[in-house]
Length: 212
Ligand code: SAM
Image 1: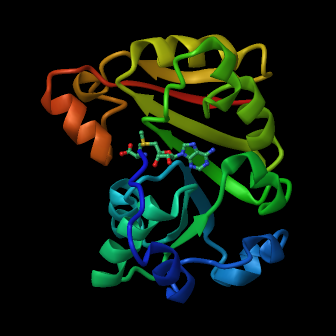
Image 2 (image 1 turned 30 degrees about the vertical axis):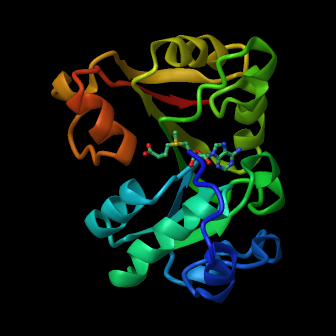
């Protein structure tokens, strides 16, 4: 998702308290930042923030951080959160390839990847968020028994993601090829923007939960 040239996006992000500026300075200090002893869950590639806002509302005892690389997209999330600020949700403008510069080893309790960009060309495989290259980055920030939850309607991307799990040193804890009809895995499911759009077209949603 890339919304080009949204006028004022960069300025609005720079002025918003909902976006953490210089997040690298908080590396190793995120627990102090929240100062409430609660877990820290992040979504990488948040888009316009629907999932993060839904999760933050449903789980006030968890701290959430939404990460998005494009200011034009993040701006939309900021606009939504400004209408309904949530104490336990902040945003970061960041390309997740640099995520280990922002979080220290074990500092993140859970990572969500939702409807990640498929990057269909083989030569772009390492840009896919469930790729082994990104799993290695997530390995550097996720606590020892932390999990990554990934969902998508893209069959090829999901097949690729499944194949990456073991070679990257992770294992599948749970998997479904039809999330919305999986009694167990659908519990507590909060739909993302893309999930609403693609499931309403009849696409099944695939999901895995992995850990090391
Ligand atoms: N998660 C949302 C959803 O399910 O509705 C948005 C899905 S959208 C297809 C993928 C989002 O991930 C885009 O907004 C894109 O800019 C962001 N993204 C892709 N690669 C990223 C990266 N390396 N770091 C941060 N965000 C990224």
